[in-house]
Length: 184
Image 1: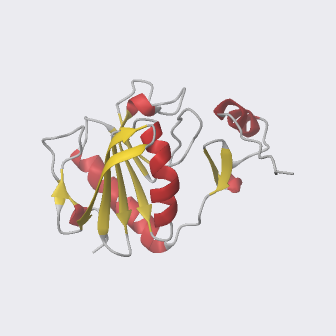
Image 2: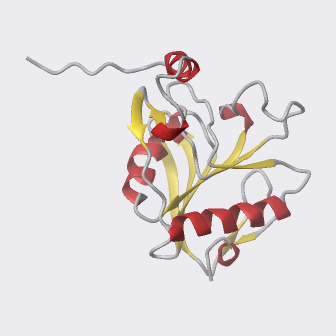
C-alpha cells in the first residue's frame, strides 16, 4: 500500500488561517500544496536579510515595493521569501498578496537553507514564471542567479562572488553590488 499525501490549495490554506487552525506562531508556508515549517533564523541570516532589504529599498525607491519576509501567492504555493521586489500597488497589497505578475525579483537568504532554496523553491519560482530569482549564500558569500524560467525549472544559473555586481532584469539601469547586500 502506498501512503497518500493530501495536498492543500492556496484557498484551503487561507481558510485554515482565517479560522485559526494556522496562526503566526506556527511559522509555516505553503509549498506545492504542502504546509512546511519554516527554518528558524540565525543572526547572520536575519542581519543579511535586513541589510539587503534596506539597500534595495534605497535603490528602488518610488520604482517598486521591497517586501521582507511577507507572503506571495502562486498557483499552488504561498511562500514567504526573504525579499520580494514587487510592482507598486495603489492599495499597498492590503487586499491581496502579490502574485507572480507583480514580482520583479525574489531573493532568498541562505544560511542553513541553501539546498531548500535551490532544490525546492527554485523549481516553484520557475514554474510560476518568476524571471529573476537570487539566493544570497551567507556562508560562501556568493549569489546564485536564476533566470529564464520554464515549467520544468530555470534554464540559466550563475554563481557570482560577493565582489561582483549585476543589474536585476526589471531594472537594467541599476547595478547592484553584492557587497552591499552581505554583512561586512
